[in-house]
Length: 141
Picture 1 (cartoon, rainbow, N blue to C red):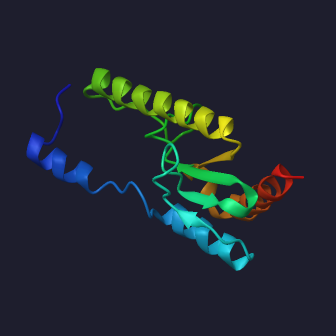
Picture 2: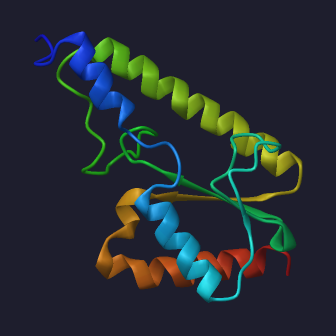
């Protein structure tokens, strides 16, 4: 099945997909800041440029899109019906790169938290924040 858009239109659409400062990132940063956590964002010195780096707690947080990072068994991760080989390769590359980055960060002594964007739904948000803060604080204890 062919793409419903021509290459130029598809390129324009894909160019609008944000890689950083997404709504879930901003929401989590605001919540963490309001709880007294101080952090840096998108540290290019660390593998994978973590979305949030909490140096005091030696913790990094990645906020992964369910589609782009293959959140298995998630309703938001579905492989497109067109150009499947391309998408399988693209997503597989992302997943492999993620794994390498996480392992390298762990070798360097960092606590790595991966938060999926599907967990930012209203009913889960409060539980998510509690879970994240406990993992941050308990890592060094």
